[in-house]
Length: 276
Ligand code: NAP
Image (cartoon, rainbow, N blue to C red; front, side, top):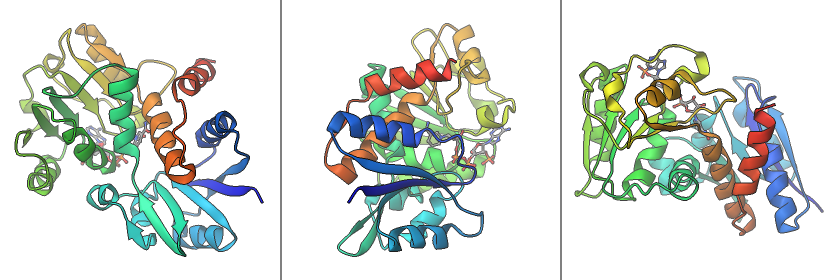
């Protein structure tokens, strides 16, 4: 019987995950079903439970349910636990296991697809929500020089530093800075706020960028986001999060099927379709 997979979210219409997973499945010569599943806001658990009770093999989880998926899982990976969020669920020995592949997706995209090692780099992460929390450990594992976290609500950035400091390698400096105190250039600047999604302005000193900077917006869009435009005006290289989306899907696919798919052709195909 064909294995069943879904991506659960609210809204879910625009999710590219079915397209991505079917492209990977074709590469691997696997036949599977992968559907979008809309869960009512208050009913993630009921919907997920029903899916697995009816033979579902695995689920991706997206906005706004990644926190609820954490509670839903019977067992969690270390990354999911520390991120406080789950984007990948599957069944093992009758138990639901939860993992978070967003961080590894970002790091793989930066390192492999954009050819930027993070070792010894000064990294700035803007934002302290679920997406930022999920990427700290995978970035720290690359041994950057330091990770600075900056957020509109500064206390949340400080809480993240307090949480992660005991866990990350002592050679990586971890600190929090208020947005209005950012004044130095960084090698890599990651926009993990939801401002590109909502179209709100992100008050950011352009001096965080210089010509060597890789500016990474976790959002993806057919046009450069305001964050990317600000970075490019300083001569920085600016990229969006389409590669992260495909790489987190590839990591989920590898968990579910034991096969690491090729991502570059899938990113290229999606880029063509987002550009109309
Ligand atoms: P979240 O938990 O809601 O966090 C939102 C963050 O944005 C918070 O740090 C918030 O600051 C900040 N923010 C919101 N409005 C702002 C404003 N006007 N000015 C400055 N900061 C503002 O969201 P999330 O789940 O972390 O997601 C963040 C982004 O990552 C989304 O765009 C999402 O689509 C993207 N993402 C992409 C991928 C991918 O595969 N490419 C994967 C995961 C997430 P406060 O703490 O002050 O509220």
